[in-house]
Image 1 (cartoon, one colour):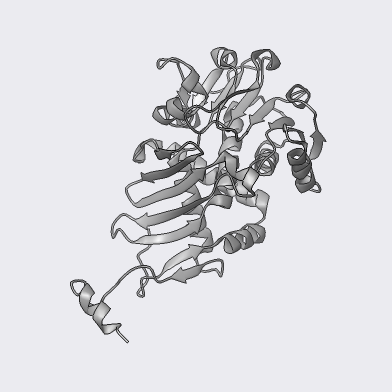
Image 2 (cartoon, one colour; image 1 turned 45 degrees about the horizontal axis):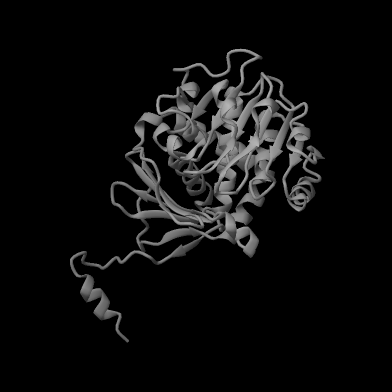
Length: 348
């Protein structure tokens, strides 16, 4: 971890600079890079502090802090989830994050993470599919065509070689939006009128809906053998997307079980319901996909290590570039014991 500058300024990546950085690198290249960073950190999973996110729930949404550290750097993300916001013209999810040097405790990066979270979530989904999806898969179903859908589709194209994405949302305007945004991406985009139509011929099924409720986006009889499901919409207690029967006949993979059992699809299941941690598959400690008939399910709720990976990536990419501004957010008196004197000397 680099030490703070002499002026103790902290690089800040605004929404505008994040968008400039992503376009400078290229969206698909960013997704490829982030997948690599997340995979690197999953391979050293045991080095990290791990705790379920700290959540404050209300009737209309949730506000969460997601902290972790590898002993050298410390990172956290602030994120909200308010499904009702869409109807009010607001984002369902917003976020910002910070990376700090463990040795000094000084922050070394502050950044928007609304866009960055969408990118890292898609990268994590693609990483899971890399280990769990059937080989030579070229078609995915994207059920739920909100803010995540384009990122998910492009990540599967960049990492998995997906060529066709079949879209469905209960709001046809959302599907039209996603299809328009993916025009010219190199993907064949098929807009569908039902979930059943969307999953026809698809071997990767991604569900990402926003409603904070127990829902059945995929019923048991809709899902055949041999598919891989990325269930990424469940992210809080009382919110699921899959019928219980799908879980009962799938091999289920998760990020951090203590968090997923509270927030993920497996909150429907008994406490002793067997799951495999994805990092164990990536390191070779456990088996992922065994055969073509196996149904695999990545029950993803997002975990702090993925945000840590994204923060590392942005720190590395913005260094020595113009894609940030320096913030004077650290009091740094000449004499560390004389904070009051620094205040007095600033008096006009």
